[in-house]
Length: 239
Image (cartoon, rainbow, N blue to C red; front, side, top):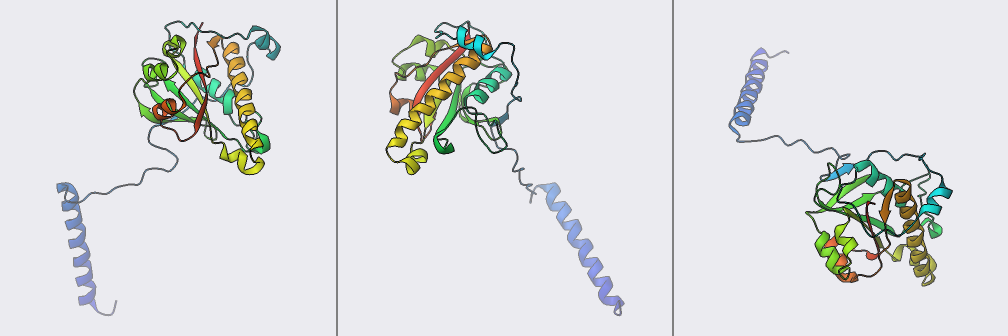
């Protein structure tokens, strides 16, 4: 540099600013906030990868499928919960197709799960939303809401006793925007496809479940905290 006095002045100023910044950080006068990674959401739980080859055949699962309304007082494993949710709406194709067929691949259904206290090993009680793309759960509400769902379901005991309840809800507009009012029928058909998948997967895991359609829609929607319309409840537990 042609002007040594100027260079010395710049170096002294830089050193002074550095020391000042360190002092402010140490005293807590200022803080550095590092943005959280976009890949990790608050309250998000990554589920174990689904198993693609079970211990029984499809034919055997169909033969053994029954509606089960009594469950042991035992928790499920996270692997079992993940497998059930994958069977309901999991991604099964690089193109984004899912485990159950959907009219025009409009996919109007959303899957929620209510977990009781000690309902799933290692998973806190709460209401979660299933993300099929990431095969993960996002916490919607903390706490055990099984009693509220039981009351909204006309006091059906199996809803209260099951360690988890899978709730299928629908955004009808995704399908009716393409198919008009006929799309409403397609949404209910799709919910039936998903329900049978849950039945068969539960059977393959030696778990019990039953389809529940009797509940107060607005109450259940409020409990879950969702915008979609609830269609089905599937309590699941050990037989």
